[in-house]
Image (cartoon, rainbow, N blue to C red; front, side, top):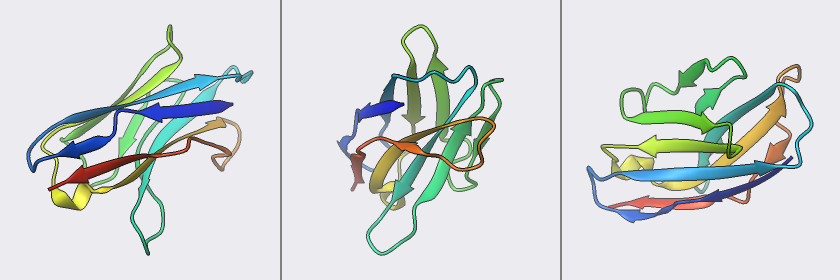
Length: 116
């Protein structure tokens, strides 16, 4: 699986951004995907996930503000981020795995989100 993120940038507190992740070269019939984020000196954390049945999960810190979704016709994963806070500043990564696997093994290059 190859993943390419886009849509990061700088925004003011309370603003919105939408991240996109284009997936290609995958052969799994059931692909589970997620968005992670990481700041310097901290471990990467999962922000939101989406399984092949459409079930979503969110980190408590983003519930009610972020929405993960997928356009299957475009093989694209999205993360709509509203009411952004400075603590959302991080490098955001798209990740994928075959749903029968536990660990995510495909990662994008990351896209920076900065909230001031």
